[in-house]
Length: 303
Image (tube, rainbow, N blue to C red; front, side, top):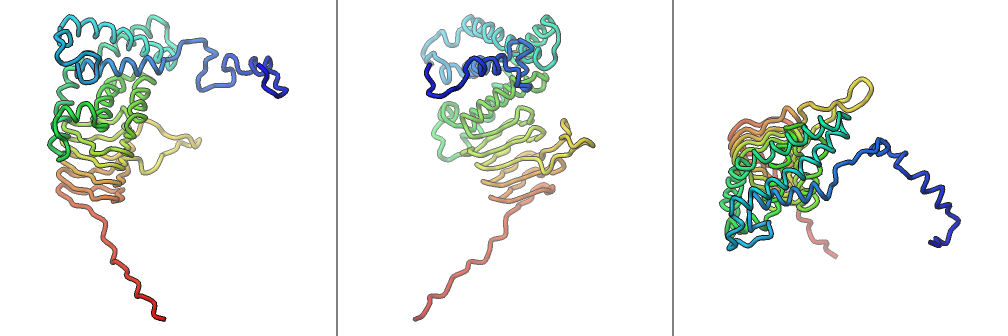
């Protein structure tokens, strides 16, 4: 190829292969990293199993969609695919033996498959919350097939199982796929109770150590984040500590509110108004709003 310049392609290729200057990927270890496309494919197939005919290829009228044998075969195939990607993640993160990583991958995939009935029950509550909480929703099916908040929550509930199983990389790939599709950023570590509804959704951020109770409703632009980042004596971020707020049952948080801090607790049955900034706890049944400024009306200039 004529590049029109004097680039030495042989030298450039030698410098870039095999990622010797990329310590993040560490590909010089010559291992197969998790395949992002394969993880996303597994994720889509799991959602299709949870809601056949809604996100899958088969129509609702097709009797094969609900056939136990068909579902069994799909579960076996998707479980094997997920186990392979998880095994690759364990190999990269832990450097354990191939057999140990394969075993850990199978255990992680099994955990997800066994959690599917419970996840579907949780999502049924989430669907009901969206339908009952949004006057614009014409049906529960509309929620399932079109609401970005529901997709983000469904992905989160699957990714959270892998996170609690200490699977590296894969749950974050899942959550960031949902983030890219919906504009809703839910870390797979967040703990979220049933009946969760994100209305509109764009710009919502939920941090890793958040704990959200039952029947909580968030509007667009809400941030449940960290107030500050603790550092050790060497100036490195301290990981694994509680950094994000807790939101108790039956709380509504309106658009653009920012709630920060690992010690911050929003008491049950509270309402947090739009654009509120909170870095401290509020008791149950609180109503927190910004004070409205007095309007200023400039008098007309007289000539």
